[in-house]
Each structure stands twice: as structure tokens, then as C-alpha cells.
Amino acid sequence: MRAEAFLAAADALPIARLDALVASGGLVVVAPHPDDESLGCGGLIAAARAAGRPVHLVVVSDGCGSHTHSRLYPPDRLRILRETETLRAVAILGLMADDVTFLRLPDAHVPSEGPAAEAAARAVAQAAADCGAGAVFVTWRHDPHCDHKAAAAIVGLARPHMPGVTVYEYPVWGWTLPSETEVGPAPAGLRLDVSAYRETKARAVAAHESQTTDLISDDPQGFRLEPAMIARLCGPYERFVAVTA
Image (cartoon, rainbow, N blue to C red):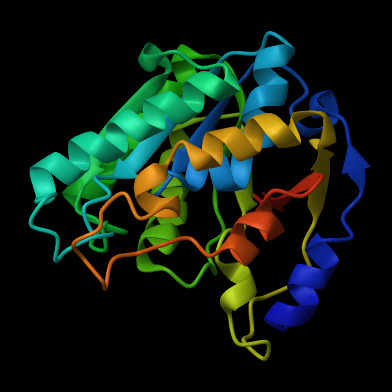
């Protein structure tokens, strides 16, 4: 199936309640970068916490690739900033600092295989065990960003160590794919109605100020989330594509 048709089908997946998405237990959200958790799963996290479900966030990369020409925010300072923003964002969604693991793999160079990827997979599996996860959520394997693909591969490596855990993928950058890109069979999965948490999610996204504002003002080539993309991802539904075992 081509990307345009796949994503249209994802937009038409059946709408379900949280307990249909994750029958029981906690949730693990795997974010390639600080901010992907809020963009792709902010409503899910807020809904799960409102329902008393444990949630653990694993942030894979250090986020240092967003502003590579800034002198005000060299890599170490940028990493600290982005992690601070993440903790602020997930606090809005209902998480504590202890609910977050930062793996700090290199932004734009997250491995899909090898020792570092295997170690990341073990961290994901451990997070799932610690919160009694019924499901793990990670970025879509066809998202046009190398780290998003790698994060999906890492969860694939973790899956044998998480028996009985359902895996879902959430598109973030998928809508920027060329429409004719082949992405495999039609999606199965569910949409979660997050309309009750849209304002909360929007505040969490906005907490990533380095990605949504001119906070880092000395890098004209620095990354900035477009308002249209934020609006696209902050609608009343979040889409979760089921990944077969």
C-alpha cells in the first residue's frame, strides 16, 4: 500500500477506549527524541495516567541534533535543556521524573542493530517489566527519519523479551512521505479519542520550547516544529498501528 492510502486508512481506524487498546497493565512509550512522546502519544499518556495506569517513557536519543550550529547551546547544554523540557512536558501529562529513562544515544545516529541497539532493547524490556506493561508504543517504522526507524527496530529487538506485550507504532513524520512510497499492507489498529486531553497535550508540546519557539536564537538552521504539523498531531484522535508478532 502507498503511504497516502496507508495514512488515510490510519485516520479511519476504529475508535476505541483505552482498555481496548491496552487491556490491562501499564504502558511504555518509546520516543526517538525528546518531544516525540508529546506529539505522538501525549493524549495516550494523559488518558492512561487519569485511569491510574503506570506509564514509563524511554527517550532514545540525546536530542542534540536539533541545533548543531548554536554557540549558546553546545551539545551538553542542549541535551540538558531538552531533557529538562521533556520532564516539564511529561509532568503536565501526569508522569514523574522517575517514570522517564533517557538512553542518550546520538541524535541522527541511533543504531538499529549491534551492541548499543541491543542495550537499548534491554532497557525497553526492563521498563516494560517494571511497569507490568500490556503494550509498548513506538514511532512508525516508515517515518522518514532515521532515528524513528531505529527506535522501531530497537522495540523489535526487545519484543522477544516481552512475551504477551502488544506493540503499536505511531506516525509522527509519516505525512511528509512522498505519497507514492510503498509502506506495506493496510494498517490494523485503533484510534484513541483524546479530545478530553487536547489542551493538556498542547501544553505538553509547548513545553518543548527549544523546538516550538525561538528560544535558541543563534542558529538560523536550527529545527523548529511547524504549526501545521503540531495541529495535525494535536487533533481529537491519536493513531496506533498494531504490529504483528
